[in-house]
Image 1 (tube, one colour):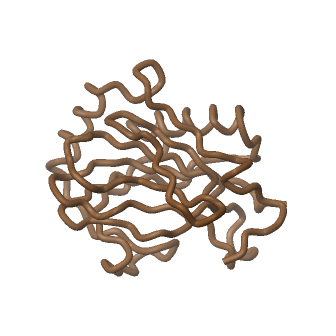
Image 2 (cartoon, helix red, strand yellow):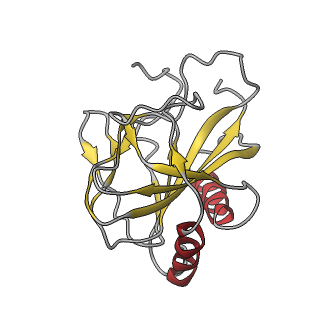
Image 3 (cartoon, helix red, strand yellow):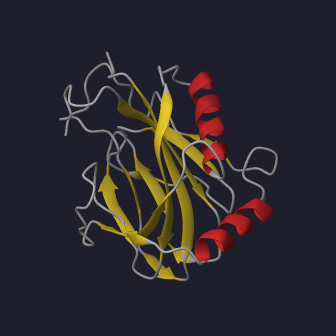
Length: 195
């Protein structure tokens, strides 16, 4: 997959990480949302932008669709706007989708991109920024990574409450869980097609 020449790469448009106490999601808020979602019904997450297509060889995780204007998603939206202002200055207009993600043993998401290079003019907006938070860190495996320009995995220092923001066209994934349960939340900021 070739990235269009007008899109910066990981070397020039690195991810932005919020992982200290003053700018990450407070631990008590993380625990609150884990407890809130623990009793709610989840469904198997679909692959890519097509709703309903489940392929656990690529993405094995259960999810809950979240409102995009309130709750834990609001932390991700705020972080995405701040990171965008400090780094990329993409034109973003809204958060169209947010998900709570529950990865249990062997849960994973193979290397993928959140941006569709073949979408064309089918939609008025495209995903431009991805904001991801982990709500806990008492699990094994399940490391989040991005691929650099050489195809090497780069692992942001994620812990409970950390939020990472990155351009949605960057390749990334989540390694398989080997023990415990990984609780995470993701939101996508959209805007008009890259020019």
